[in-house]
Image (tube, rainbow, N blue to C red; front, side):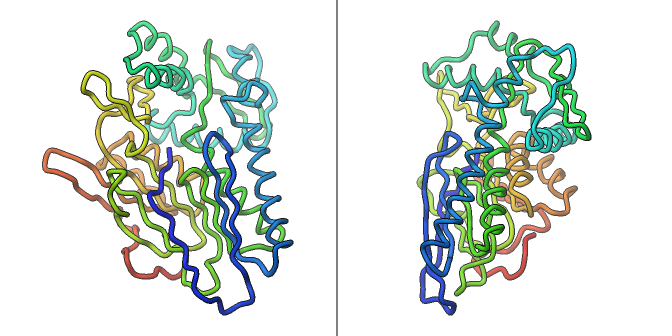
Length: 336
């Protein structure tokens, strides 16, 4: 999840004695890019170190590839007789995830892990999962199988073979946390791009905002819109880059927990929110809900706005929530 087509940052002369620094590294099965403005390289390096340490910590919590991660260790205990203690980060993300699952009637669901593993194999082999495998995986999926006590930070997984998959939320959360780590060491003019999920701090010293090109429906197309943004997060969900065609049918990497299948409708969803975790999760949810129900969800959340570009019987159509900013002109202030 999370592909921003183009990230463009102004590089003209600055009014303050700040220099632009950039760091790129692999993390969370993707690439994290950090761009910041600092007075000197030593300050920039301290900010990069703080951000990357935070990302590494969260990877150790949420990775479903690392057998030693907190997520992997938690899932190996399912089904549980008693709740077990979890980290504050796990409790926080699970609490929001379960609330969004309830709000979307299960369209967003971090228990989708058994299906994720099945479809990784399907994409690799180019063939649909067998019906019996799908049924077996679906039996282990369902947010109601997660019992969370957020006050005491304890969790109980109640179904056999459960696997949590935070791929639809954690890069946005990590980007947000990385920016906060840099702000804690005094660097505020910065952005974090976690595999396409952006969290933006104060803008470059010479600009009203970071210039962000929003992802189009097709990978080779130019950005669908350009916005100038600061103090917010941007997440995009779509299948322009990640999909598989099997027997002439295109399946997105975005899986519907309710059917067990990759969604077949073509769309690119861009969500703006005040928090990276919220933006990331909502982009995933709206992709699954479609324009009508997706926009209704966004309108119910005051800190979020959304643009949907979808292919339909009448061609490509664009849908906007009421708070989505106009493009091509600098947006001042915060978003939405």
